[in-house]
Image (cartoon, rainbow, N blue to C red; front, side, top):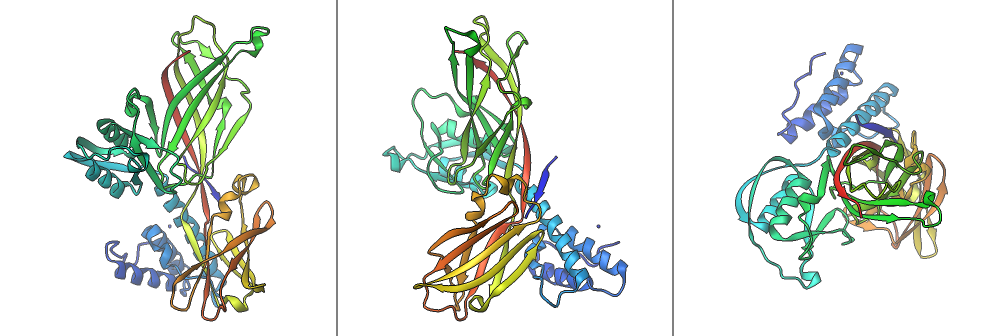
Amino acid sequence: MMAWVTLFGTVLLGQADAADPEALQFEARRMVRQLDGDSLAEREAAERALVQLGPKVLDLLPPMTRNTSAEVRVRLDRIRKLLQEQAAEAAASAARITLQGEMPLLDALAALEKQSGNKVTDFRARFNQAVTNPAVQVDFQDVPFWKALDQLLDQAGLTVYNFSGQEGSLAIVARGGGEHNRAERATYSGLFRFEGVSLIARRDLRDPNGDSLRLAVEVAWEPRISPIVLQLPLDSIQAVDENGQAIAIEAVRTQLEIPAETGIPATEIQIPLKLPDRQTRRIASLDGRLSALVPGRVQEFVFDDPANAKSVEQSVAGVTVTLEQVRKNLDLFEARVRVRFDRAGVALESHRNWVYKNEAYLLDPEGQRVDHDGMQATLQREDEVGVAYLFDREDLKGCKFVYRTPVVIVAMPVAYRLQEIPLP
């Protein structure tokens, strides 16, 4: 079951065909008008109809204005929250691949990218490696993305390079001659791929209580998502040896928190184990669970006439963005923004860097995007942050200020199992 950190259901009345954007837009507008209908039954039916249309109508819902009635405001906010959660849950599911036949490798990778939304970038030329395009044989029927990718890379003698620095993309390179197949090394769980990469045993010759065993596990995720942090409670881990005897976990009451870095679709976690006796040959199985905090769908806040803005506030689904003012700062314009989340939780308590990665920009009178030239934090609270964005422009006449932020954070539970790990 997904957990949600919110930051930040009578008969449908002529539901639109999802394949017809114009019909969908017409239906959404009609239902929005009925949110302010004369009867309670009509208003509730319209709310249920909008929810059942699904996340595709999020961009069709109108912004809140001073003229929005109190009841419509409440209903729209409730609809947005539900649809944001639906969208986040859909994004949090593993991409599935269906592909059969023999084809060139690069065609197969392009098909994976199209079906999954996960960009794959060939880095072989950057490493002075031969860029080949061998034929591969595939038989994928609703196969999770990572499993399909590993099988393709194994056929072509390739692997993933995690440090490309390209956000939203996986880099592939040629692998070393002695490297085991990726599919043999991995276990999969939803969006995630787990692989034990090393074991370090230490025996303390003075005090056996100092003996330790450290298992390094690489956790990779589909690059179309960008986790904020991985939380690993050590008391969730159970390990046994080849005889079914438990291998104890050190610091069992500890919870590891591993922030994700931008442009690196993987991280390494260190699991502290008690070093077993010398007769133990392997970890037969290690089961655990972690929680990944993942941003949901992004909401856009648009402010007209920013040059004259004075504490202009917009609220959507538990997130309030306030454009305090835009003032001249030497030769630059400084846009001061506050973002408050109704229930931020750990996503802001100890891991707030994701907020500073939110997009903030101007749209000039021609509708062209103008990125900011720098930013600095101005406020940090448990449920609120403030940021000043600098823009190098002569004037702001005809411009709009745009701020984009996720309003839902998915606390995604991920169970995993590693097996048959030989001890050093």
